[in-house]
Length: 299
Image (cartoon, helix red, strand yellow):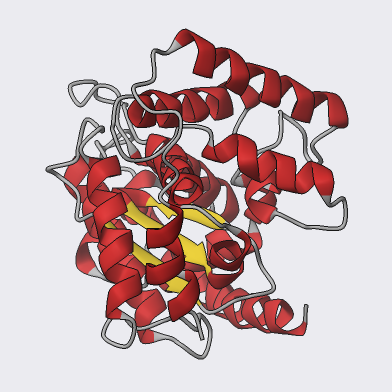
């Protein structure tokens, strides 16, 4: 809790400084009231946010790729399998980063194919099928369903844009300026950190993400497709276990909590999907690889 408070205080100060700076520029924010956010914008923002996190270990401690090559080799393999199922797999720089945070059990997506996973989540999971299910679920939020539509954005980019505009009062042009000219990415990070409750998705969107993960995994020959069900069962069997990854995906409500009937609804949906999709694999879990490449490598 103290560590999280330190994050928020640091980011909050940066946010106030950044808003003050950009409010002075806002007279030229709206030359185009609806500028287009492109796939390139999303990729650039994701890359820069990722690098900002890596470059600031005092705020975001993480496991360096060069220090844990086996863990990242395994993650890269899973990320490749997930990325190739999306509309924009060849447009993004797909990459995962492990935050050194055992207290938080979480995974979240940044724009442009970047997925952040905590060491707490990796310690909770026991099988490769669970990890790839989580990654595939997150990939749904980073995908674009129709690249030819002017207003089409990935789910996560759309959320960040709306929260940015609401939190800062600045225009879309400034949002794009920050992305493209590297002005002050800490502004967007501040928005993310101070508006965590808003970065959630309606339950129908969660179902689509779950469905994508199942469909992708049902048509491969390596990983079983019931990884998300395993994680839900962990939460049900241990009421004191705080799996933030589940908490961040409530039905439409301002103050989270998955009611028990909503958990049951999600379980029923997943089971129905598993029955409807003809899976080519139901047995192999990838346990040994996960133990060797992840669990045995964690310090």
